Amino acid sequence: MHLVDDYDPESGFFFGTSARSLLTRGSAVVLPGRGGLAPRRAETVLAALGADQILVGAIPFDDHRPAHLVVPEDHRWGPALPPETGDAPSRPVTPRHEPPPEEYRRAVAEALDRIGHSDLSKVVLARSVRIPLPEPVRIPRLLRRLRQAGGFVFGCALPGHRVLVGGSPELLVSRDGDTVVAHPLAGSRPRAGDPAIDRRRAAELLDSDKDRREHALVVADIAKALAPFCRDLSAPPRPEIVTTSHMMHLGTRITGVLAEPRPSALSLAAALHPTPAVCGTPTGTAQETIRRLEGFDRDFYAGMVGWCDSTGDGEWAVTIRCAELAPGGARLFAGAGVVAGSTPEAELAETDAKLATMLSALGARLDGEEVGRDRRIHAVA
Ligand SMILES: C=C(O[C@H]1C=CC=C(C(=O)O)[C@@H]1O)C(=O)O
Image 1 (cartoon, rainbow, N blue to C red):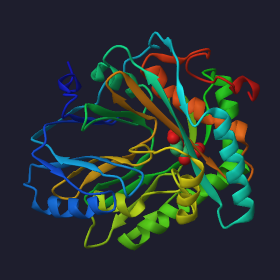
Image 2: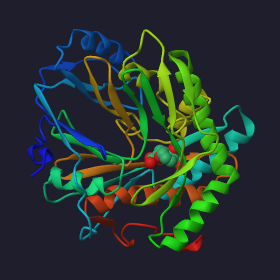
Image 3: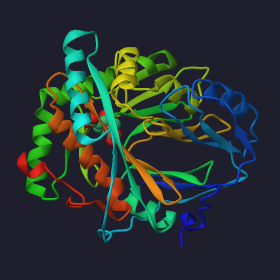
Image 4: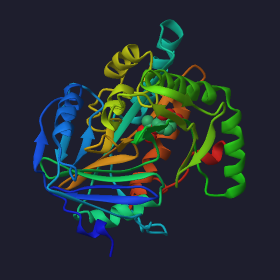
């Protein structure tokens, strides 16, 4: 028995790391407001919180969409959630792609054209897949499976019997006293599951000029956004490989010491969002490109999910490797960074591989495709 087993899909919030788990129930206060406004309102609420109260929830990618932030009726901390090991049996499902794969490839080609002919240097283009779920999902079991992926596991009940679930490898920002940490990821390869192939891919990823550029843009942007709040800020000169169950990424852990007055974890998260790991550079041009080329609403995907306490400490993960569950079905999301040197085919394959995290946790495979890791990757191994 773990505290995740008490998860209430109508009002619960779960956030688990390799160190500990947080479970909340009910909502004493639901904060109204849209993305940009929500963190400011949340600051007022944070300031009014009792010492033993916290704020939890999710903020969407787009500032104009409503956030879901609540002060729960109660919360509990517990030990890390043990992962459920072994591959779940998978059943074929018929997906509804949005956009269809060939349109996604066209969008990447169009983005590459813009990168060559405007100030745009990077844009993250995403796709979504809707799948039917004939049986109700047992969320505690799903979250255990997602722990296997590594990183931050979350379940966030949303209005309308929906639940946002995921296993994100990416820390947007955490604050613990005066210590601030961000751990951006960008630049990816799917894992093959074969240690020798994975070692080769990791070496190739570390060496890839295209991926190093894609990554460096994110690190520079985050360091610039954090600098005004810090009296000390540092990042290693080279990225490291971060692995999940299905992917490997370039990652850089940025750490800083906050100056007074220390902003809350939520304010820091709002100052960083949207990073070029989910949007692009420059931000405005990338946002406009996403609006024009993606053709669907990201909703909570590529936003942030996490918690903040009354002292301002907290953790916010980037909402990726996630799905929105609704009665009868799920909608999964994945995106990939496009820079000069990207190709439509490789970005499509990368998003396929990223989708596999959630698909395999849900025990599903897209009809006509192999489950899990590495559908097209043998070609590049
Ligand atoms: C946008 C996603 O991943 C981000 C995080 C890691 C690597 C990424 C990349 O290589 O493109 C993305 O920036 C996603 O999983 O949907």
